[in-house]
Amino acid sequence: MKSSLRFLAALAPLLLAACAPPQQLVRNRGDAASLAQQDAREQQLANANHWTMEGLIGVSNGKDGGSGTLTWIQNGDRYDVTVRYNPITGKSVHLTGGPDGAVLEGVEGGPLQGASAEALMRRAIGWDVPLDELRAWVLAVRAQGGGAELSFGDNKLPSLLQQDGWAVSYPAWDMTRQPPLPTKVFAENPPYKVHLAIKSWNLQ
Image: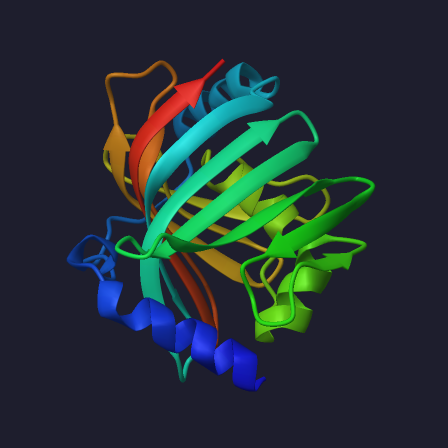
């Protein structure tokens, strides 16, 4: 746990306003039209298994937190996630893996290997972050498995997605894309919070 606290403390100087909590969002219960539009979005994104997302990330476990820059590359079932928390020295945390296991580099005692990204995050920094679900949530689609509840904004796009104990808010969207993609994603399951301000999407 000492290493996790040092890791979080190293992130703190880069805390960014772009990852600040959202203002109160419009949250309408899904009517038939909104749900049909979301079903169509999810069908369009069902095969979106190859993408790159870049932006800013803010994290908190209720006691400690910080931020950095994020690059997430998804290639089918394999992922390559880098969080840079010191741009001057180039220090970063690098998570790679897939169904056969995961490797976490850049933490004390690393590199660490484990059966899953979730297990490594729990071991390295004491967090329970559902990476598989987050992979779906960053696209504003429901993850497979558990039931999900959706609320919608006036734009008929998801405003709040609740699934597996997490509440995922979408306060901003890139409306130039078809289908639209979120540019801010705030996932919370107290005491854990993950705030993303997405600067660019590249879907192949």
